[in-house]
Image (cartoon, rainbow, N blue to C red; front, side, top):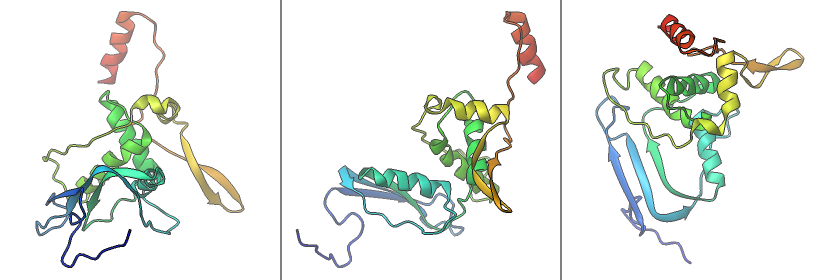
Length: 195
């Protein structure tokens, strides 16, 4: 098949692609800054990623999805590259989701971690509603949840002089397990103390 250049064409010039864009407040002047591009059928992936040694969590997740070979859609933004939440940001975002009884796996927490960064930077107002679609559930990685709340979670390695040591994660939303008697009153009393 021969490639054809379409003068003045855009992302939807090729048959089978749809796109929508909105101004969600990333760019300060109200310009469109977030887009969804969707293929009618699973499409082959071709992607270019940073070669930087420090990659933001959303980049790492996108790289994993690209390795699958086919995708149906992508979300792209313009005007903000403040996504370097690191492992601590992802762990805290995951715990924040779990705090409300929803739960998610670490890769899905990158969405919430990114939203938290945008709120902190003032790109999203604290009073605004934001919808985050999380596709992975907490049962995918129960050890991660247990280690986070017990204070024993460590990821990756940080160089320390001549040796490499595990990078410890101190959770902002840590909810350490408590041992209580297996009675209704003991459990209710423990929950009341938590308030």
